[in-house]
Length: 324
Image 1 (tube, rainbow, N blue to C red):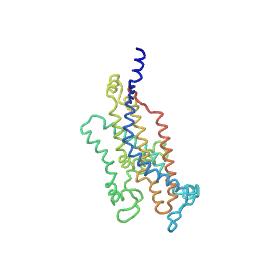
Image 2 (cartoon, helix red, strand yellow):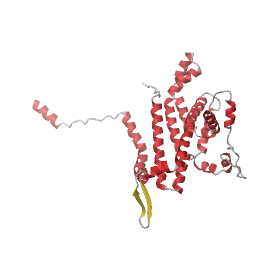
Image 3 (cartoon, rainbow, N blue to C red):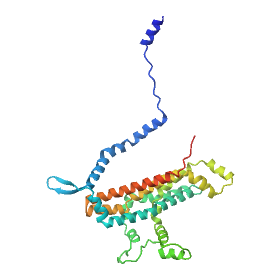
Image 4 (cartoon, helix red, strand yellow):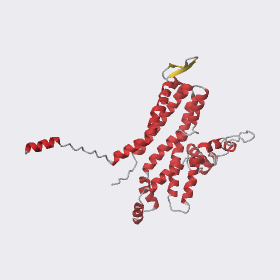
């Protein structure tokens, strides 16, 4: 009898254990499916171009008839030329970084302020949201090209007359001047640096509003994800609107502040009107292809370092809500 049972056990097919895939793994597989076209394009098309650009910065080029472009290894000479021999690049780089240090906090703060206002219950809230997002649409694609060729727009953003070409001293688009701000702060001990910063911010308000649409939508999404019961509890406990913002809204929306700051940094450093990008592009077309490639990689390293510093500093103060 025992021998018969043992024989049956040996001949019976073994049951295959069914692998149970967790929900997180299923989501991960779905994510890879959606990003697969980008990854394939990155590896096949974009990565070889990046590698060729890196190789180009360490060589000089010479066109040989019948053989194309011949490369000669010269080490770091192109980087030395960009940093030491061309003072215009360093000057443009430092002035561009200085301007972005002012613009990026202004864009993030302004977009957060508008998002908090538009998150309130009001008549026509959807229309106001659309109005603040319209500049994002107008500053892209064909409309941006038409606007760039607009003579009136060039006059408003330039220092010369529209017909006579006469120098008018200051930009026609300036709302205030440093003299106006210094008069306003004449009774305070305010340095000239702060006066100039305030002047630049006020005169750059059009550009700040133009570049705040995407950040505003991200902040709105974060504000609407906060549980209304939390605000009801604060109201019952007698907290003021000011206390509720700093104790509840600001910590809960801090992950969005990190996302928007990084997005604004990258968007500002790679925008079409960025002075450093335009300088490198003009240098490529007019002077040297290899030196401009070295300038571009110097600029990339600086941008990458700034993004890493911003992400590292802000990550230490981010509050993540636990959802048990």
